[in-house]
Length: 215
Image 1 (cartoon, helix red, strand yellow):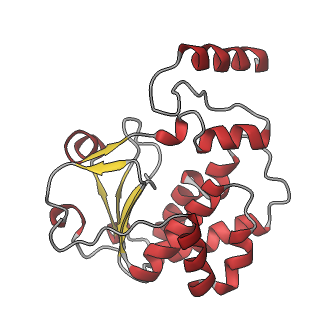
Image 2 (cartoon, rainbow, N blue to C red; image 1 turned 90 degrees about the vertical axis):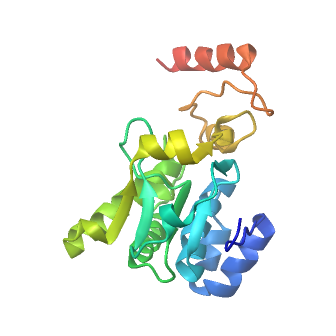
């Protein structure tokens, strides 16, 4: 897309970035138990360091006008999760270099990790590095400065229907949700699609059985 550079980072490149630019928290990052937790912390750090737009690899922009969506004088630009609008979305967001909102997010994530002795609990990724603490940190920052206009929140329905498509491949077989379920021993999100993103009745029935067993 004109005037934009698309940069892809694999796990090794993300690790090198953290080692070079965030040496004070590199060991903490490197020792996180799951790749998705590293990906969460890395995405906050790289946009804080460089500025720009972050999007998960399974996210597709529909259209050719990123400027109208992301070129504005705000400390953070994002949307809430569609359709419930209950949390800020962290699988895509934009911010300028040195965004104080992202600084707050990074500080809270680091503090949460340092004060967690056992990661094997339900929804631990959301609470430690993911959407839960992302949402909490943004609200904490906005309350601190008493200025909600510091960020711009797009209408979630408009974004999902007209501008952005997200495949949610993390919830497919072999995705990050599968990793979390196996690591914690808790199946808190059902896996109903195979590794190619196709609905699998076998997986659906198996995960339904696990849920019934837990109840």
